[in-house]
Image 1 (cartoon, rainbow, N blue to C red):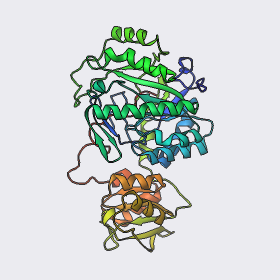
Image 2: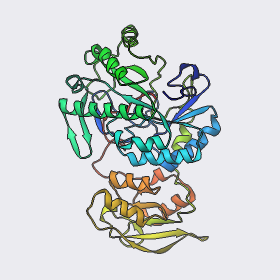
Image 3: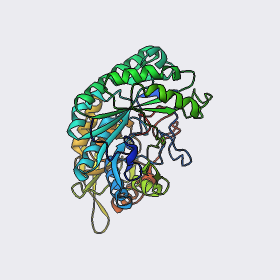
Image 4: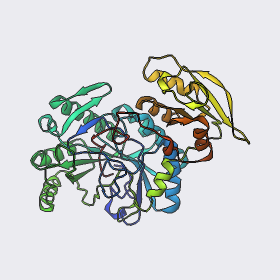
Length: 422
């Protein structure tokens, strides 16, 4: 077990002197839980899966700089969603790399469902990620299938007991790999009356047998718009009895505050609301990249941003000068097809660009561009309007448009978060 002295979620004694900041860089999720509805900018709710903004990796670093200036007692930088950190692992790993480079003194922590974690064990260890919170809601697939509507592994969607079994096998592999690398592991279990509450001792026993360090039993938060909305929250007395049973197998976390995906401050003195404007400001700020002087534009005639990223055969390359902006030249787009390889090739082609302006683009290319430090900007209007915001530090979010027919938050509908309290 690693050093938990300055991690308030793993050490009750640290809650009054050590703080944490959750960096909301992971909007997507790879499982659909029957208790979760992730909504952004839900300021009155304090629960996992909720955030007021989503950050790119460079924005997360800028936000972290400001947070540390305002609250120097922060000792832990973590990623807890609002989806799962390994639904788009490139964004997560790039964020961790940037933080480790600039803030080597901080503890790094992740909250995840574990599905995509095993593939990144070695890199996590190299980056010094010392604490992982893993959500395990069942160790019996017959019970798990009542909790998870589906589990998506790559392009394959699993349902029913097969989904729950597949997820469990990945979770057990993740725990084994983490413990082999000396990582401290806390398991979060959402206690759902009538579904898995009777199953808690079995979960505790199974986790103890695999070397887990701490168990956090989290009462169900009944959330509107979910299949479990009508299930009442377990009573404090019921939770106390379950924790007493589970304590026979594992130490219990009893001070969880069910943190938001953008939580910041001490557990005993949360400053999420106070620093919300800072978060949203960073989310709307184009990153400054002196080594990336250009902006790529998907345009048909060179006046308007009016092409879908995937339909553009070429990109105009623009730069700022003392009088405004000027066209540097054009670059061909990679040929269609090839999936992720196509967007990796585009990122290489635009490696000296700080942003790409397009009228629309899919989630996959946006994720790849962000991994390579290139801001994807979805907008319609004059090219110079977009360039003004990117270069002059305006609100990029104000430029963004949504494709017709797509409603709700950026991250999609009701999908389960990576794992709750860190």
